[in-house]
Length: 466
Image 1 (cartoon, rainbow, N blue to C red):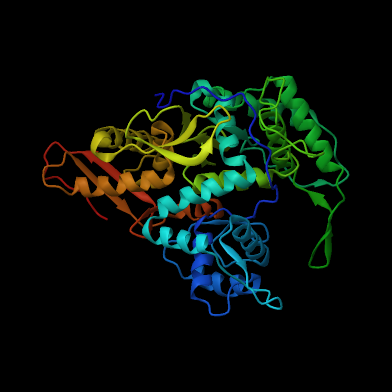
Image 2: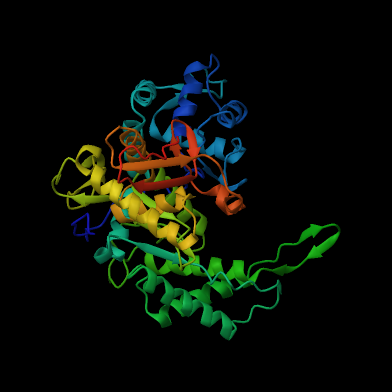
């Protein structure tokens, strides 16, 4: 179903004022740091953020993952020195903190705008995230440009974009570092990844085969030319590399180069201004920055992404917001401060429970039934169900949580036609490192991982457990 009707903008977005985005994704870190600044008699600096904010977050019941360059892409642990430094830098750029009046003090205190922003967060985390989104747009230009670019890449299928990985069954042993040849099997795997992506998700990787193979091969050669790092394990120097990991990184670099160049795919002119010698917005040599922006925009409810697409290994992302001239219905909420160069404003898709409860319940049930039938179990992964429901309804993970909360309450009503159960247990097959890194479904600050749902013939039949 096409929930959005939009035409992407082809005028130029403004050039970013800054490019060195902080290496973290969770907007609540800003609020945590502002709270710390408000409570501290001394003020705020990098060391205080690392020393005080990390332990606070480690004790939170609802801990959303943060992007951390030093500790890995997903981290629930404390705050690294790099993240503390980046966070302080962005708070200064936002105008939410300022240096203390004493010249000798390398400490920062809240500005009036920072105090207001903190009070806004205490009233409404949603409005706070809108303020953050506007600030990021003002400084970096990426949020609006990125959502617009997703639409340009695959407007016929609601902005779905896929960055593939090699087939899951390909798990070769380590290769010698000097063994950098582009073998026929690498070409075959590269072609297979493109064909599979567009078969499972039509139009999600709109690249001709020869161009895709050439871009992946170029990235493979670049990665192979880098200086070798030596890792000492029990006094043995490991000088090989994982061909699967390198091919995965090569595909990521190729996808960024072909899809997120300043020139949209198959277009002859850029859709964003660039300054100086850096003619890119997201460099193909740094897939980490693409992952960071994807995580940030997901946290701000602008897009949804998942690394768990059935039959297609890789990352699927799609917008859950759209640029429109006018608000089409009450299901759309306008984001202030983000508009296309032609004046279309960004609207979040947030369908209301009162008007769309039947659609949500029916979609939840149908997706559950499909997955349950495939895996042979009534209680199945809530995260798998969440991913597909969000894809079909074009809603964010946070809005799914809200609609599920209302669905649970609705199913507890005596005359409800639905019986719904969600459980917080984590099954053995969900305890892998990858499984534990997936975004949870939150209900009342508790992460849930399993779901069962059925339509009742007799309203007295219940399986409700929350």
